[in-house]
Image (cartoon, rainbow, N blue to C red; front, side, top):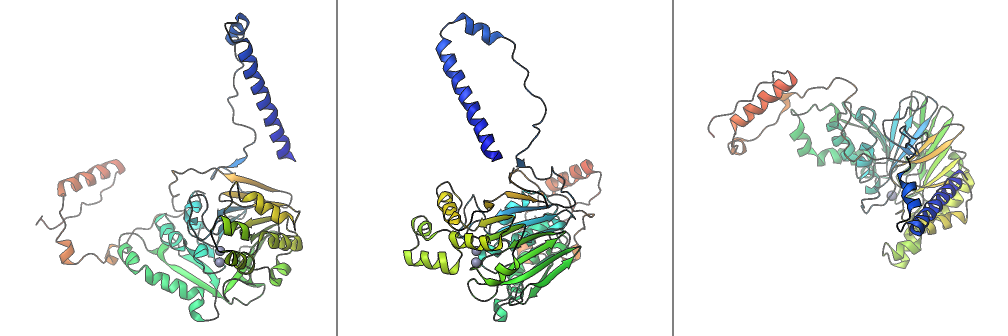
Length: 425
Ligand SMILES: [Zn+2]
Ligand SMILES: [Zn+2]
């Protein structure tokens, strides 16, 4: 309602502006009256910030002790696009705790825009192991360490029907995949943040506690998606409840345990029509993927009508000017409550009295925040180094390097010794 009033005011203002233009055009041709009007002293423009900011600018707002702030760091699909990363939501609590739910491809970039020190971004909960839910785990893990996270990354995720379908297996293989990467870094950067801890839990467990620290309780629910081994999560803190489906077909566990959540995020997949016309799927595949593998918007609406959250959030579709009207119309066939159709950088401030929905203002020139503890140095003894064959190919510009060391030491008041190389080159 408030938004309508604002839009109405803008419409009136535009109308007045347009009338002014017409007025100017009417009297503009050499009229003395107009010349006098133009030379009249203009009223001074306001010099103070606006009283109300409708955007969230990272790092500029205190989080109240009883407040929860949730960011959409990925709302799209497994196929990459500039506008939307794949599944990822970040929850910040008034007690200072932060949690990442899913880590889809592209999401690490969105997380970086929030200007949060990476030491706090050390807890990731994975709903299942599709690439659009884990594709940026490596960027958060290794990139987060380079961005000054000085503690291990902790990852919670489900087991699978077989060992090889579980989260532990995936993380073990991810570590193996990055053997060269990790080998190249040891001795050059501190490796504390390059450690990764896995907490695998039973994917069949219903409403079981998988995390409980600092007044925060996170539980798992079985989900129905892909093959066995998908889960959804609930997070409860300070009388507020956040629920995140990851991907799932509507199911009884969710309907029972997500009931009455303050913020309920559930997949809301593109309609078979959109999958056919925009995604170019054959009609049979669109119907199967859109209603059997995933939850269609009308099914999403049913789910939300059943659990009645204070705010329903639909995600997992390409949210554009030409898809949103159809998606929303489908949801509205089965649900008439509060609704956010998520796009990346949407942010929800949740308290017991209010849920405020805004967009985040992004500073694309963002740099990582410093670590919250003194920066740990690398241990040069861990360095693997090069073979003689490769090392002998080095052409050392010793004087240039010497100058860089001298200038840098002068600038920062340090005494880092210049490395000495074999003088052959
Ligand atoms: Zn999936
Ligand atoms: Zn997905």
